[in-house]
Image 1 (tube, rainbow, N blue to C red):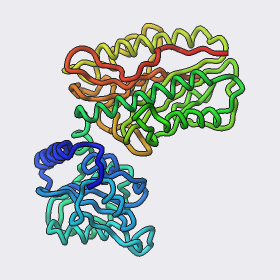
Image 2 (image 1 turned 90 degrees about the vertical axis):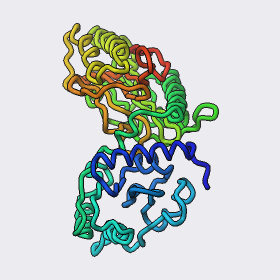
Image 3 (image 1 turned 120 degrees about the vertical axis):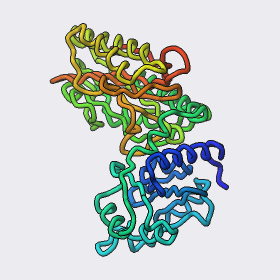
Image 4 (image 1 turned 135 degrees about the horizontal axis):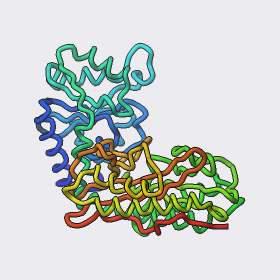
Length: 392
């Protein structure tokens, strides 16, 4: 048995939650293709999500790991799945014109006696393709195949104490990276070298919290480019008279604690200072509203009221559930922090609260990963001062 990230009882708890949700949805089998869900259920961890793979949850017994033959040893090395429950397809299925790996999965499901069952699949998972779905449906003509997107994700949204400990380690890495970023950022520094320093700090980690690869690379647009939230880096130099926001996440054993701050080189204009002050006030108000029993939308409403005071309206959501994740996204695809989201906040939820401001020709971000507590307002897991940083 490999050294698992969590106790076996923790994995048993997760499997029981999933089966309860399957029963409620009327499912006999669940095909979990999102790598975060596969990891959460079994411990499996490998950069193999670019090919078809899945965890099969049946009504009883151990789940099955299914994937490419060459990755089966990865399942043996990183998960609790025993030999009888590791099943695989031959390499001839990979990127072949005349067959698809899901042809093999359909065969395996029939061999396991579930060819006529109600089978849930994750239609919105990044790595569940239209071609794969077509092949699976064709290979299981007697089955009823149902969209079960989000079923596992909603079981993941409330973190156990063991998971929260991992989130805290990720947050320590986030703090280290952002502190280092603000120390070394200077006009004239090339962005690629800057990111290299951040990545080294992130992977080095903090004490026993080693740094894992993040699901999203650091984002750091400057000046007018900061009006776009998802730009990475190039070889440009930081320039006087421009703001750069830095969005990154420390990652420990796949758990993320996203954190953003903005630095301005020179003297920031008054409109940016007012916007940053309003963003901080909105963060503080939203964290105060992020209490167990309130709605996710209450966080957004509290934040928006502060922005309205200075005439800023945001058309976007201002956060989402975060935690265990794989590329291309550290969000969990469940809770959204927006006024229309009526999800009740529960202790143990972790959210990236990020009221970023992306205007016509400038932008800034000041964000926090927050933990919903049993009592009182949420806890910000990171400890970097909330402000517009000014250098140069």
